[in-house]
Each structure stands twice: as C-alpha cells, then as structure tokens.
Image 1 (cartoon, rainbow, N blue to C red):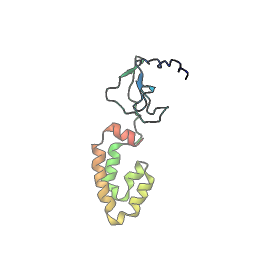
Image 2 (image 1 turned 60 degrees about the vertical axis):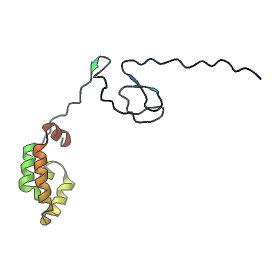
Image 3 (image 1 turned 180 degrees about the vertical axis):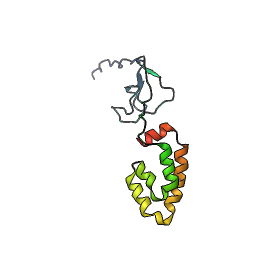
Image 4 (image 1 turned 90 degrees about the vertical axis):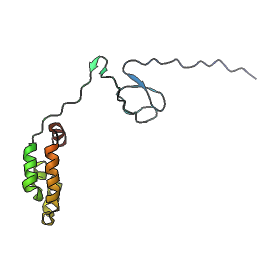
Length: 132
C-alpha cells in the first residue's frame, strides 16, 4: 500500500465582465461565444446580456438601404403580380418564372395580392434586410 499524493483542486476561475460559463461543461467562454470550443454545445442567448463589452457599446449592425423601392414592389405586386413582375423586380428570378408559367391558373394572382399586403405592412428596415 502506498499513499496517494495530495491532489489539489484546480484554482477557481473568476469571471470578468466579458466572460461566462458554458451551459453544459462550465468552461469559461467569451460572452459573445455561440458554441463552446470544449464540448461544442450551442450557448443560450440570455436576455440580460450586458450592453457593453470592455466598456464599448455594442450596437446592432446597420442595414444599408435597399436599391429597390418598397412602394414600387407593392404596386407591381398589385397590378402585375399574376405574371410575377414584382418577383423579377425584387431579384427573385426563379419565383418570377414560376409565377409567369402558372399565370393562367390565377393562383399567382391570389398569392401576389397577399404579397402586396405583406409588402405594404413591412417596415423599411425589414424590406432593406430582405431585399438588398
């Protein structure tokens, strides 16, 4: 019988302002980490995340304005949506071709009317993000 050497506990890690623990394995991570490098588990996004990291304010990315007009797209959807013209205008070529091929069924006209309403109710920021 020989005695086991004294095993010391690992030192406790103090979390800084921009650190957090992994949800699954308690590894110390950066607060912006989406995946843990040790166990690979996706980290939940907490609603109470700090607004600053290292005293630098974190802002949402700026979405550049779209080169397309929301009103023009809505009017094209209302008047010529059955032929898919609004889809061509918005850069959705495959959808435009499908609308044009099936225009004789009037199904694209019904869908285009709902898209007309959706386009009008969409905010400018959503439109710019969806149709750059």
